[in-house]
Image (cartoon, rainbow, N blue to C red; front, side, top):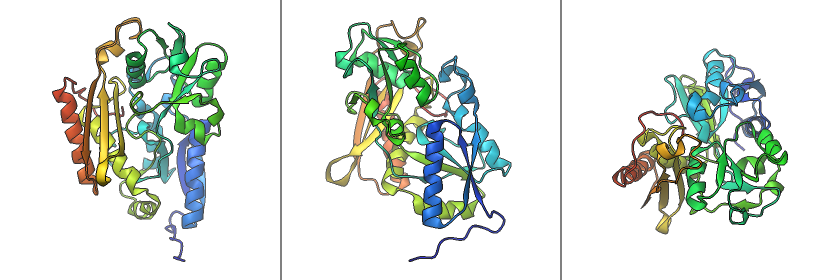
Length: 331
């Protein structure tokens, strides 16, 4: 058995910066267990409340995007209070700030969206005009494409808060990432898991990423041993679509890789009109604009090939009428 990698003497204990929600703490604890078991490291968790956790009365698209969930953690890294940060990859900006690096992407959990309801078994079973909760513009436009009659209402907060609001009767159903429910042993709350053809996932959904300072080459080398190469290649292609489209929380965009023919990766993407999603009175009563969809297969063995696939699919979206959003934060 190979000897455990040695922690640099200047860092006798590795500290993980994490948000303090139950799901974020589970994710950080999962990485902690991996580091301790596989690398023999001593690991502590530094729980933090981010601005994205504090502002719950406005949609992310109006307060700066999902990058608000990682900024405080990056400050802890830059100040040396933490050595690494664990993120849900779909919350990580497409381009990290200067001085930071994505050191590792772990094996992916179920990447699909889940339909959660206390009364109804599926989206199709909802009565006309039923209230569905989500604050994701991606989910909003995809739901409206499937059921234009639905009333979509904003839903912010951590996973437990969202489930509580459903249980209080504020919504007939809500849509969440299946990965979070599975990680917290809440699979029983899932009434239906959407197929990608109906609800195409967000770029990076279900995957965990580990961020470090770019100058921590010791950590980057060690953490590479935990990476899942197929997942990392797949999410690189997905995230490249979002980067190429200027992906942000104010642009409804989905990108998801599945296995193609003969070992190829198949990258599917869908773009919704932001004007529809941000219409007065909530997108929500406005007729949905048609989605722009794109799909391409390619053999992918390197990050450069994954990025090329993502760029090609983004070009297909633009050719189909999708409009570049003009910034580079997370979709």
